[in-house]
Length: 88
Image (cartoon, rainbow, N blue to C red; front, side):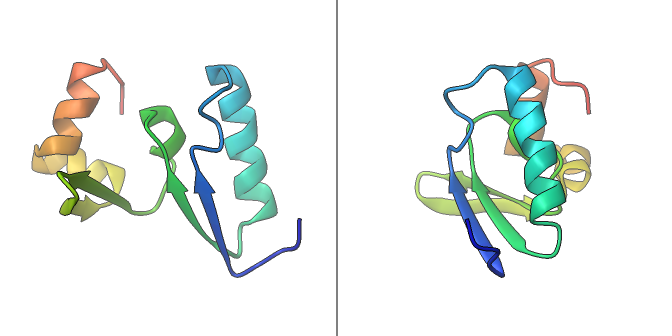
């Protein structure tokens, strides 16, 4: 794969276990550190290391921010984190 300025990953780790997902996320961070990486994912573990999260609801942007900002705000993302017992 060539190194590009923008990399789009659409459910790239959806079919792997959580341990493999963690390894792949570390590899992505290492290999594409200077790139903008747009990750589309359903697993919180996959996106928690991101700089900015865009939460979609019914096809519209519901909220944006860093994972910690969204948790502190108490919106949809915070509800997902609480509902999944995901420690942030």
